[in-house]
Amino acid sequence: MIVKNKLLNYSDMVIYQNNEWFAFSLDSVLLADFVVLTNTEKNIIDLCCGNAPIGMLLSKRTNANIVSVEIQKEICDLANKSIKENNLEKQIKIINEDINKLNYNSDTFDIVTVNPPYFKNEVKLNANTIKSIARHEIKVSLDDIFKITKKILKNGGKFYMVHRVSRLLEILDKMRIYNLEPKELKFVYSKVNSDSEIVLIKGIKSGKPGMKVSSFVVVHNEDGSYCDEIRRMYG
Image (cartoon, rainbow, N blue to C red; front, side, top):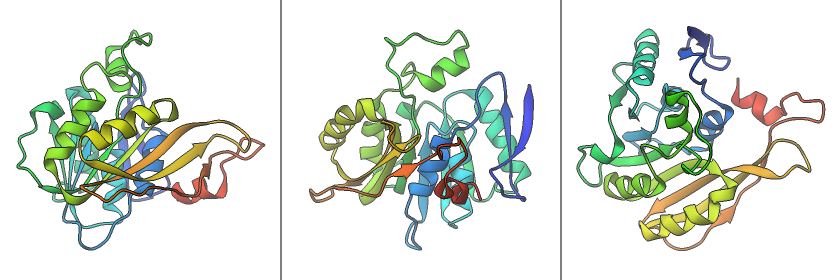
């Protein structure tokens, strides 16, 4: 069933979702908040955008042009419905395409963001095809993501990704192969004293070596409520 929800606590923004497929997650909120924006960025692209929560969240903080790319037409239709209702057609463009077939010139974008499928195909697939494509590397791999990012991101441009900690070393190795120098990590913990399962990653195309680990994020208090930092992100 298609449902219309508020986008976080923004009274003026809505997002359409299908509760039989998937809803956007906290990971998208964390990634959008992790992105550093200045007045110099003119063009941003969000790969594997789903129903476009990251693009919409970034639009609250920047006037840059935003392209959101999603391979599944059903999800793109929901994204377009949200963009139209939020009157964001002039700022956000939704593209229904395989990222391997994107037809952009080299050095086009100032920022690339991606919340990609987390799991390799050897993990048991969901019976729901739309969920499986969103969660598993059926249609897109890490190499695909880094290859297109290397092409379309400007030298000195910023790359932001959210992913599983279990694949971090693989990600960092591939980033360097594709000339995306890892610059910052931010680990996310469900609760204090829990293991981190999610990490936010920043890279710079053709950047100089040198990486920092910034202050971590804890999602839940001991009673299960959201911590203040997450409450701030949700508005």
